[in-house]
Amino acid sequence: MNYLWAGMILIGVVYGAFTGNLTAVTKQALNSAGEAVTLCITMAGVMAFWVGLMEIAQQAGIIRGLSARLDPVLSFLFPDIPKGHKAREAIATNVVANFFGLGWAATPAGLSAMKELKKLQKPEDTDASDAMCDFLILNISSLQFIPVNMIAYRSQYGSVNPSRIVGPAIVATTISTAAAIIFMKIRRGLAK
Amino acid sequence: MKFILFLSEAIIPIFIFCIVAAGISRKRNVYDEFVNGAVKGLKTVFEIAPTLIGLMVAVGILRASGFLDFIAEILGTIFQASHFPAELVPLAIVKMFSSSAATGLLLDIFKESGTDSRNGLIASIMLSSTETIFYTMSVYFMSAGVKRTRYTLAGAMVAAFAGMAASVWLADYIL
Image (cartoon, rainbow over all chains, first blue to last red; front, side, top):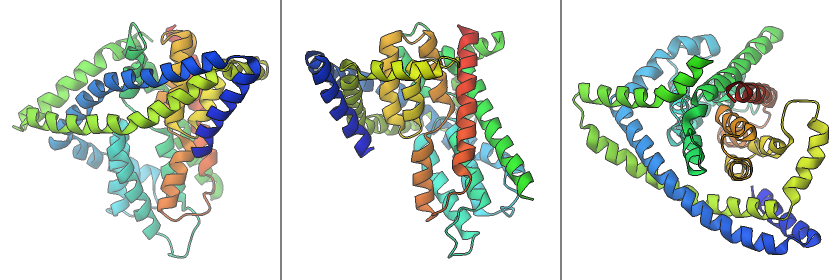
């Protein structure tokens, strides 16, 4: 991240100097900074509303209920994890939290899932286990239900219909997750 | 496809209704819970504000210098055969490393081509469909002390490419 950011700035200034765009660079740098703050103000409203709503869902036990219901799915995806193991609970929470766009709740659950999966290995083993690889692939394929941030960005930038992408995004995220699951299953089949 | 568009319109209101109804029917103090959650949401936004400022300035500089157009031109000739727009190639690559940097590029695309243009739609769907590959892998594996990650990257790439292909196809469909 460090090099990526520095690289963008350094390349931008040097390239701008060569192409004679330095005035535009100055103007854009100042404009962008102001724009970022405007965006954050719009985002603040959307995020406060969404996270507030999710708090209700969490307190009402909806998130926990859904996690429990995921158990049969987890048996299918992760046959190596023993039933009732703590890793299952953490994975389920991670998946459900991601599903509702609760990044801040998903990451801690995901990290504890990795730690629990680690306990299923020999302590000196530094290779990722099958379950770890599969869990991360699933996590990266990210089954997300409503992309809240995206809707906020779109409305800030003048979209006539910011939530138009919700349906297509659900289809796209389902396809990417399906591809992940097919990959996991084929690999498991080949390994046998 | 009509169903997908209907879903886009109705899903959020239905979802909100269900959650509030579930809370009330369990006799919970939904208003206080909402306010508590809203505080958390505000905190999150103000935590990402400095990052967002830094990245939007960096992307703004890169855009104004003409460098992004230069890259898109080079990549455009390579990607001409596929349906994938060249302007989105930098976004697809950056998205694998950092989601906040990708957000900076996304907003730049919104500004340049509009949120509801073909590029704007593809970018919106694409970023909603997958997670940041390298960032997620390094954080999760580091926390578990794993050195060899085996086939994780290959699997994640398969998922990411499926998501990208689906985004282009879906955007063309609803356009």
